[in-house]
Image (cartoon, rainbow, N blue to C red; front, side, top):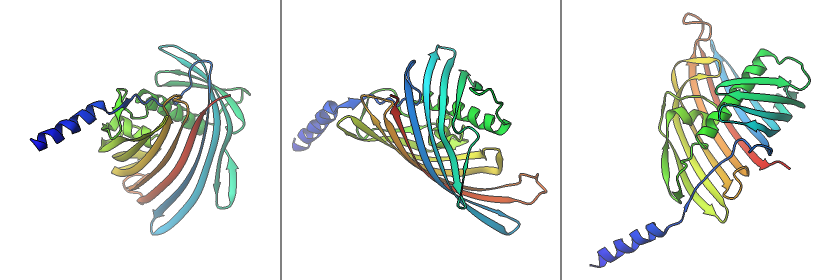
Length: 269
């Protein structure tokens, strides 16, 4: 009898526990702006024919995105890049995009990028920006890998392979995934989501591994319940693998990469 009462009280508490609908905006509404900044610290080790090189780097970025127009089939936005730089080996180098403004049009996975100064973009920079915008749209579609239905604190969900790679760091579709997300806490008007990522990837950018390699990562996201443009993330991930970029008979290349990154989004003024 006593056990039944305890169980009934527990079930009643669960039924009365508040639930929250979590939304994270990675693009602003039409007519509004979003300020995004990030800083990442990476360590990359490369070994070829017994020679090993380790590079430490810090990447910093700051940009403002303004949504100009949005329909069911297309998006037009203005992207102002105030900072895009890498510091490594005591040297700091700005990317060609720093200090420039771009008009970006998106129709599905087709991305058009036009610089306000009319200068053509190098192919590598255009490819990187195109991948960045495609990733942004995939992350938006998955609500940053958060279910759209109301969630109670403590709720945990699985993250599928088609979303896990992009939510962690723009890896694209994973070969397999054992990734999860958890609504860890709600403190007044801020929700905290803890992610654990474990998946396999065949590629790291243009580098194709001999076999899919494991990627392990974690991310903590804090987002305002009243303004989905106001959020922060702290992310870390690690991978290592072997590739033959020159072909099967060429020397093998071993690489190991670790990244720690913090990012912040705030509503534009």
